[in-house]
Image: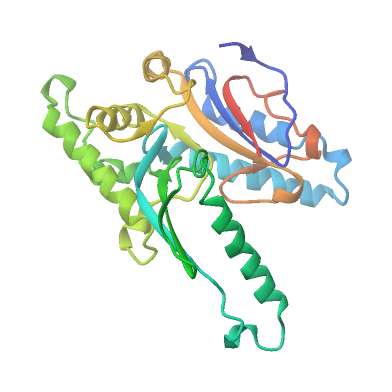
Length: 292
């Protein structure tokens, strides 16, 4: 991997997977301080950015980084197929009360239904989305679709309790049953995450900024060993990432917003729109990036 000390340009937001040197070489607090400076580099390009507002932004970015890079731990790498969901689209009824007095909504819904009727007849239907036709009549169409989970971070203090894997155990005492137990727990959690009333959800962190740990690697391997439908991207090489961690490097996923994406508690905000800086002051190695 090439070490980048310069900056890269963003769109509305970018997620960066980065590695930084071991703590004795580059303290986390210094990395945070440097990255905060990067985000404010283009302050002169931001309309209405007063001295007070800039100070507020710096404190906001520092606070988010300090929390998530210390406390938000990625549960597993890759994209996990959790289950299959279904949706049914009914042919709209022009006599329905919901369309009373205005037929524009009816025409729109009828157009959507007609389009789906045509789509499900195509040979390549669902090729990119994984959707499958379950049933189609003149008045209703039911389609199944895969439900995926990825980028699930949680408070690091809760990781062991949720997976049942306690990192104080020595590797030579771990068994296949331990890994199966952890994999089953992760799959169970992913299945209930769609239920907003489940108390377990309060332990999850809705964040795009987090750290990758040896627990993350262990959980990912446990899922793969137990035949979970898990897809890894090229950069998610478990051996290479684990080697970095063994060498003392820190691995982070950090989302940087700018422009229309605004300030969010799960990201940092960079000034300057397309020219927002990331990695000019902060010394990082870019492993992967995605811009939205």
